[in-house]
Length: 370
Ligand code: NAD
Image 1 (cartoon, rainbow, N blue to C red):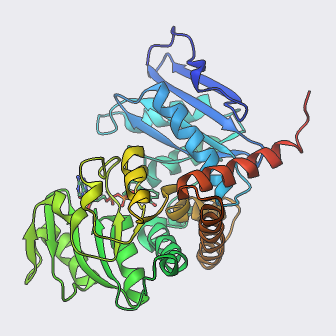
Image 2 (image 1 turned 60 degrees about the vertical axis):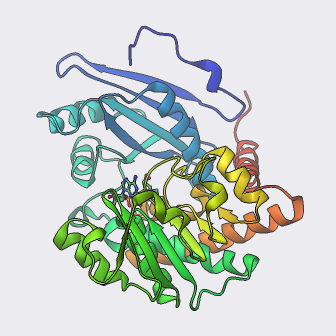
């Protein structure tokens, strides 16, 4: 991320970004960027990505994604994102994060949160430096969203709303989870509470299936104790990629970007896909799935539970109110997205983007024009 290059203006449009700040701290040599995309709905919330190869272009795209996600979720927050060019596993992480925090002290339009390479400990350092952050440890007033399964809970709520659109009944529905981690495990658990049956799951080491059903908590214990779902007893081991095309009703991709692509989208058997990961399918794959009648609830609608939880934490709310808000907001937004795409005959993603943009544009009309 060289800081003598001109800012890439190709990403600029009527929504933003409104502010781009390049950071350099000469003492720690910390280098980074903050992109505040849009603040019409309120101060922006978005994570700090810490990686040696994080690019400005990536931070611009992620900041816009947060504008749409926060607006779609109906939060009083705009979208922003930050990148720190550093290896999070290297010595001196605390010094680097603290230096970055001090550099953004006066950038009040941006509220940092955790992302790749940063966690609740890093957020605690930032709170200590500037007093403005989300994703804190419980002892500092944080709501531990991964431990509670905020995002997985939201996915189960989205499934409840979307299932009737494809004549899927959650009671007895067969679920496959790609990426049995924080999002994937809790999605399975909350779907199971609604009567669904987990029939297959994967992680980075491979996949397992069992058409008769796998207990989600027992599978989580196997992963914790033995390091991977592949060691689960009495389940059939499969290749990692086979998970996506396994016989099931509901598929939750909750691992990496672009795992559903043009080559495997045609073989997917699920009727309903809830995107737990961010951009788990390419645009080509989403078009193929739409054409085939597979209903895809897009990432920034289905996986908004985490950011809703973060917003409730920022405003001093409790765990209980976080879950109430996730339930009501995801229920409403999934329903509105699916109604719009039925009426307007568009894809769910196009409908969701249009809905989010309308909300941002409406909020912008209340802002001073000159
Ligand atoms: P995590 O690290 O807890 O879990 C990821 C899981 O995916 C792990 O089990 C890992 O082994 C597995 N995995 C990695 N590569 C894989 C592959 N190629 N095939 C199959 N499995 C693979 O992460 P997480 O917090 O559950 O996040 C998962 C995704 O959801 C990420 O894309 C993240 O950005 C997104 N997301 C997370 C949250 C949240 O609240 N944690 C919110 C919104 C979006």
